[in-house]
Length: 626
Picture 1 (cartoon, rainbow, N blue to C red):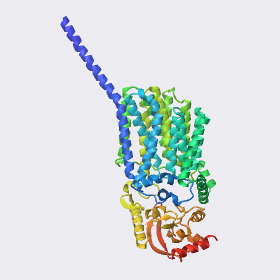
Picture 2: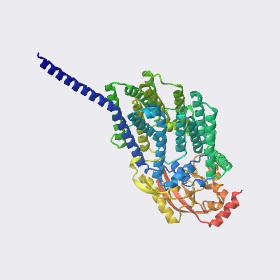
Picture 3: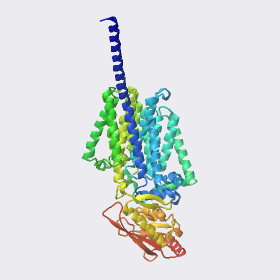
Picture 4: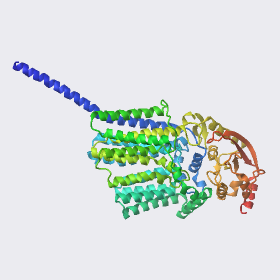
């Protein structure tokens, strides 16, 4: 072979090697793009989930609890005694949004999402620390993953009660406390300030949860080795300032605010004594999981152990496989939301415990991968805190505490986020965060899909509630079921025909219908919801009426449903100079179906006072003191 041919041969071979290297680089870049594609799929699916929920905020209405919430939000000053001050906290938002229920619900969801996003970002920040030297791709990925995981905060609405209430206030306050715990290792002063703000807000929502949160904070600080007098003083002083400011704004005096809370506790204790309700909420026989849910728990833990391990792998096939699985899961989530895929999973109150299962799987992957950076002392402390915060949220309830804690199951998911963030730091890649994002999206989709298919105390799925009706004095437009819309429309017609005007007092003796009073713009007497069916109902309603003036009591109308089991017998009204048989005239009735018991029919009766206001007021003054 001549020298010229040898040179040509080498040139051709060199060209082939360059082409092969180029192809290899192209294949490598495709594998490198796979995690980014998976993250994009998660972000887009999470945005679809958020949009879907915001659209559903104009559908459905629970006439019991949500009716109670709306009365408190609209006119919190009407009630001189209260343990929870959520009505005062959210009242400015109610006024700002013009009393629009759909907008109010949307705002509540967005507040939770923003707080959750900040909390998730605080946890993930270590992945790109220091921020200034991290690549822009890593920074964008961390922000995107934080948003995806934060959507799990919306799983709080598993009962579909999106109207702002004392539970949502406590949950949002605990997220502020949790953010303070996470930031404690970087900015101690800011951390203790956030803990104080969150603790004060939690007290305004539910004092028992604030006390439980304080115990969790002390436990975290002790385990993490950050128990310091200065920090505790800062947090306690901040919480006191929050409460003092609230006291001055609400009652104009700290002493009057204390009296409000004392009277509210005493009033609530009449309905259900503390020792018979809240202290029994964590009975062992309440802790029950079906065989189906237990099996799903094991499957989810195993699935996310595997997925996290694959996300940490450095081989191209592993990265592409993980991205493909996550992208397909994201697509499945969207298909479920739009109704293209039927979700046959049974609706169980313990469904949020699957977040805990996934977090356990992610933690197990850290053991499998042999990570040496976890568990650190601070990581153990934050995992302990996140494990207990759902139970701090539910302390003080009179229902099943084990199942109620699941509403704050977002904190259990964050255990997985803490582990995944530690793995990301150890392996110098943000890819493990994708596993937590996948768990967040799929878990939240399942929980909220079931919530909207079985909304609390409503007869139909939200998607099928398409009958428009105006609710309240602000004339909020809601889409309700045919029966719900007809009931409210009929009541509007009945009150208009009988001369009732918005703002007039009405005594609800049905025991279950505060939402109907709100729908027609009535002012409930004494308490926002005359709870029926409890041992102390009569004492509770009587005590509430004692706060009212005789002029208001004498001028009040009555909504009753005497055939309903939880209705309140009217005999106690004689203590206020009222006889329902002689002093009232029935102006009409409405036949309907009890909204949370499909097999039960109910007849609502509207009664109008026949005496003059002056005569009724004098009779009340005469008999009230007896």
